[in-house]
Image (cartoon, rainbow over all chains, first blue to last red; front, side):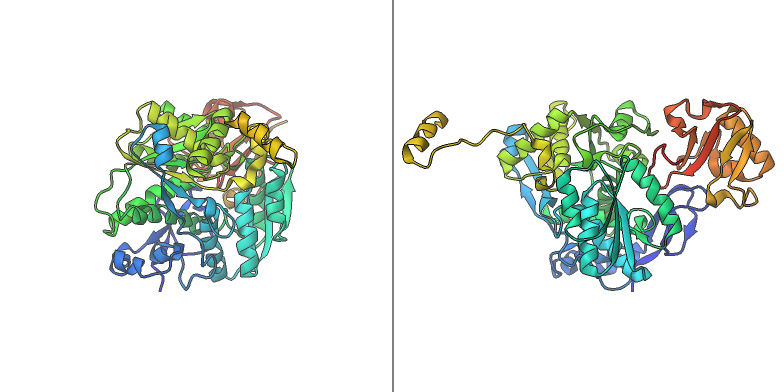
Length: 410
Length: 95
């Protein structure tokens, strides 16, 4: 009943059956899911989608599962918000925020990918799920995994923000804090994944997991009234989200749900970890790994697995890459909060600050439609704002004291 | 003292199950060319047209060669070389 015909190496094209495998035996290229678009076209129409529940499974034909969705039945279909206040501030006409700060259940876009990964893990018959994470994925695997009844092993860099650690621990996974950065955690996990028969969502389940990101793109198109925006700005860590959003637009075009596709895709990174935007600016597709040093920990992947494909997507769509300083990131978070009432984690600050730069440098035209992807909630990384917000006004519990302060405020 | 080259599991079929083999001094491409003479087929699995394949990482003494001189990085007796499929990222520790 599924619409997946197999897996295929993105590099050398060798084909594989649907299994928990993720790398080509021959050239070590990543494997990607292959769909039967002809059949999907017959079943997935605007009408059929609109009749379905408002969650990410409304696009299920384009997701790599065989049976019924089993995890994340309320995930996805987050708001697309017209951001006129912010647009005025940035000096552009039409701006939208794809707001995954309110994703269910753990307030980041990772709820999408994990919903798909754990449904697939059930289909494969795994009883244990695992991940390497900078925080958001840890939360989502911990939470979705609890609900779905999996044993859970979650590996994080020990230096993560304390609030991100608590937000995993509360679901009682086996939380392993590794003395190393994300890339080192990931390395370790790929060794563990070879030895233990677990569903590592971002390793051996990766071809399936990553497909979940497409739902953010599908929703943008549907919520814009079945139109693609002129520009979309996407934060990049591994580069997977950007690659999959571009793929989602192309798939909707392929199956006829989208008439025209001229969207430019822009990659947003922190200057302290910008291997993707640096390569784009230098006009090369060779990623030079970096050792991350940025306040945007959720984007701190120095050796991005999908960096090459993110660069290809940007090139193919005539987009560009940009990166911003820690100071600009904090300003970005604050600007989004005070104009649109949305509190984003540091990645959102990156996206917004990069968007501002792209507008100022003319890469994004002021009279076009732009969507920015805000992928995680600011309550998770409040430490980032320590010393960067105003102080409360302290008063005595009487009217005179209040009015004294009020005078100063006015 | 020779150069130690660590072979990843998927390529051990070509090295008769050996996890570690000896390499010759010179550039990384010299080392790969020599490995291919002794273990035919290994060359095309890790390189293509004189370049290391995009999804293969090579570490010299636990440092990614992309931080050194890429394919022109030279190795000498006593060095340790690890060949690691890139998979989903990774840096120099536990190479």
